Image (tube, rainbow, N blue to C red; front, side, top):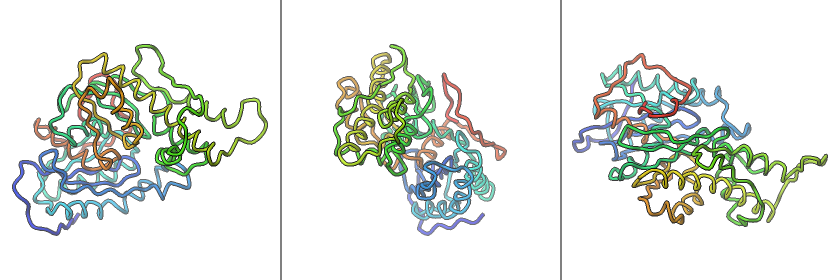
Length: 359
């Protein structure tokens, strides 16, 4: 595997890690120095490719990764002004995700590592999101609450030290991003649903439609969004009705979008507040595609309990899947002396609850 990079050597750094991410529908690579200095961050999104199906088709996604991975890696190295020989290590997502997609990134990372004699570091995709706060702000005070909210994952973690986290709660059904995607589909909005609902909601009233907030038990830190999705469906098409589902437009569409988005955000804020009141944390950080939602960020800053914490809201580019977060977490593994063999395998499922390792 030959990778070109065009630029002179940069100043000396203790680590220079290439991170590769292909767990779902973004082909991404980035170069990060010393765990926090993002030298490059290149992402190719497959949104247009999957829009016709309103969701990610694994076979289509992996084929696109195969076509894009080498140019993306080359661009990341070129943007950073480094050559493969300048790297300290190569990091790659190896769990969780679509196996076919994971294997593409892993093949590229292994080839680079073998060709240039570089150490290989496997990274857990969810844990990379958990640690995005430390990538965005290396001085973030710990312990911290970390919310990971995306199309495939919604979970709340207690980040006690770099590389060590405890999962406090997770979704029992739909992830927050999945709920937004499904809600957008019901409303006739384009894929992906989160940004479409956010745009439509801008002109709507958040209290226009009474939708449920499923908080589960009084002490629960788990999430559930399936009931909200069903409530929207029955708002558009009452259970006993034989007429087609309503196709909202104009003010009605805006009000429904705003009310639905507010219900999702309400649940996320309520669970974060519960966790903050229960655990002596100093900071709060967010990651995942839903962390790009501006209404969520606004509510975090408004909440009297949460705004008392040090809020670390990463740049939008670090919230969606990206290679920088992979390289950032790999830096922590590197400092701990951890390395992985070239036989490292792809794993589709996330790690179980409780204390979670970095990979």
